[in-house]
Length: 140
Image 1: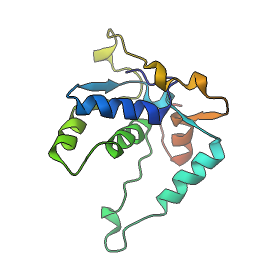
Image 2 (image 1 turned 180 degrees about the horizontal axis):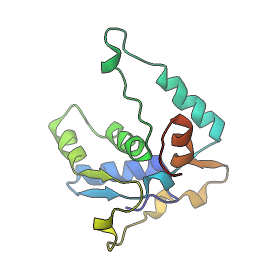
Image 3 (image 1 turned 135 degrees about the vertical axis):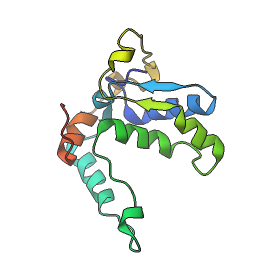
Image 4 (image 1 turned 45 degrees about the vertical axis):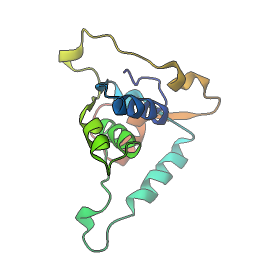
């Protein structure tokens, strides 16, 4: 699946459904996926989540990802039944990449029309822009 110009949450839900059916899913161009809404509100929402840590052992608290591929993987992980073996096995069949790896450069990728960002009437921001603000050192 090609994530460029796709709404990240919708793409993640489509991927999660297919993973649960037993398909192997590869998502490329994760940095080009978009989040709907204003840039400032999205950043404020993510930074508020970053304030959450475990009191007993902060290392066991929520993981705070900075790269677009990790954020997209985490979105899919949240949509799978992770407390069941079926969900964990489905998650193992998922691969998310920033850009297109050389091993997959000849492949053609699906772009689900129901996840397209073209239908958004208001603003949106790419995952790359958000991740740069969060400390990602990749290329936006």
